[in-house]
Structures are given as structure tokens and as C-alpha cells.
Length: 237
Image (cartoon, rainbow, N blue to C red; front, side, top):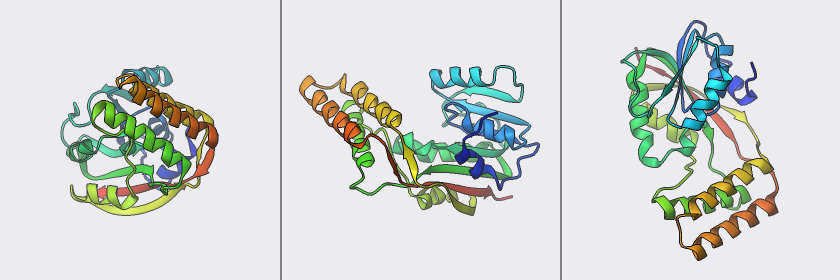
């Protein structure tokens, strides 16, 4: 089972043998694959996106250890104390700001006393970074179209404090990827997001944002920059 190095590194120091786990924001199921590889007995893969759900089904078609939950992370269809370990791999950077706190509260609700939490995300990049400038254009397009940014990058201590307010005790913080490889395909995908948001904007404004995103993506090509971190915490008994 193919597991990205960043996921393997984030989970390497966790004891997950026989654990019931939850991947918050399943995406393509990378953390689910990592949890199974680490010995998890069951994984709830949670996503509210139909395309991601289809990808998880395709990736784990006959694995009865994986249960796909198509649900909002703010309202999980699970009882209290249901899971022993939770991962949130590259989740919080794609959440609107007002979703972070209720999701942290809901993940805490379903976690058993003594549970492990592993949150992996990207440190904010410096203002002069061309990749950050492209993300800034994407955020501008998203805010103009839907009144909220597409991306939010939290420093590691920010997410540590968020969950600390819900009773999680910090265990360790480590770097799992540095520099981060932003490939041409990554930048193309973010440019496509700008085009999507621009459809609901006045033509002149939308085209201006698209032109700037395309310029930044083309001039950058690809870039190795930034840091991805992993914060591990434990829920008090």
C-alpha cells in the first residue's frame, strides 16, 4: 500500500497497533493508508466531498477495515469516545477560519480519553514567495466570489493552541517535509481554482485575477520552499 513519506514520518512514532482511528478530511485517503500500514484495526475516513469519497472507495474497495463516512467534520455520525487516534493531514489549510474551532471541538468529542491526535500542515510562507503570491490571488478570488478565503496557513503553535483549548496535551512537533515541493501540476491546479472562482465575478475583474494567477504559475514553474510540520497531542485521561 503506497503511503506518502510525509504521512509515514508523521505517524512513525505513534503506537497504532489495533487502534480505531479517524482520518479527518480524507482527501485521497493518504492518512488512511498510513494508519492501516501502522497497524490500525479500523479507520473511519471522513470527507464531505463526493469526488474524494469516490476516490477513497476506489482505493480501498474490499478492505473491511475502512469505513467511509460522508459527513461534515462539525457533525460526525459517531458516538463520544469512539476513536483511539485521529489524523488531520493537510486539512486545516483548506478550511475556512470559522470552521477550525467547531471541528476541533467535534474531533475532541469522538476521541476516547488518552487518544492520540496528529495534525500535519504547512507553515505560512514568506510574503515574497511566488507560491504564496499565487495563493494570495486564489484567496482574493475566493473572497470576492464567496466571502471567504480558499486557503489559511497556520503556524504549528496556532493549531497546538487550538486543540490545547479542548484538553489536548502537546507531545511533540516535528518537521515532516522541508522544503515542500510545489510542482508545476500543483500550481496549475491552484490556477484552475482561480478560474473557477472567477466565473462568478464580473468579466473584467475575473479575467484580471486569472491573468495574474497564470503569470505567477508560469514564471514560477515549480518551487521547493516552505515547511510541513506535524504536531502530536494526547487527550487527557
